[in-house]
Image (cartoon, rainbow, N blue to C red; front, top):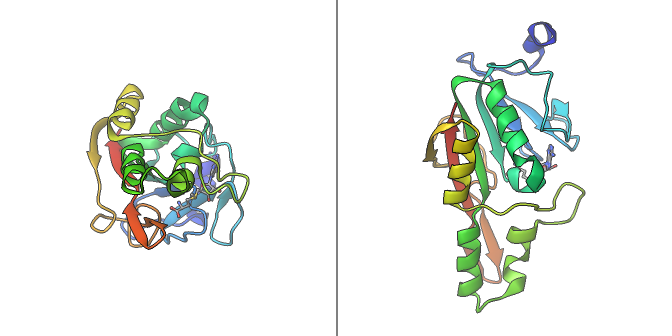
Length: 193
Ligand SMILES: C[S@@+](CC[C@H](N)C(=O)[O-])C[C@H]1O[C@@H](n2cnc3c(N)ncnc32)[C@H](O)[C@@H]1O
């Protein structure tokens, strides 16, 4: 009921699709309903309780995007978050994720003569504000299994430079800088409800 009356106040894509951007941070993604624990002018809904978003009815969203957010969720809550996103998605809707890839972090560690300084940020989070601490590590196999266990299907890679509804810059394509070097850091997977 709330959604029916509130829907028109939120952005929609020109094609009528409903897109949610959870943990958008400072990234303003026009056409998305922007949600974050922190308040910014472009954030439509400020909440940290992404295990439960009852303001969104079930089977509503076409795409839910979370870029470098899932690793900030506590280990005991990750299933609840993925399940809540699945509830909100339409059948056929997509959960698009980007997270730090632990396998890449190991590569950085090895490429920097096992420098802990080189991997602290990608492994543990920036730690410069309350919500910027990592609680979880992922690699492709682990994330794929997690998504399948929550009832998603068709887990597949996505390319931030060549995909629909991603015409902004964020961590999905950013590289981790250490000294003079820049390293790929992200694992970009999406799954279908
Ligand atoms: C590393 S930043 C990524 C920001 C942006 N997605 C990007 O790729 O540049 C993580 C974002 O997730 C938000 N965040 C962390 N935990 C959250 C939670 N439980 N609920 C909502 N937002 C959260 C933080 O406030 C922050 O803006």
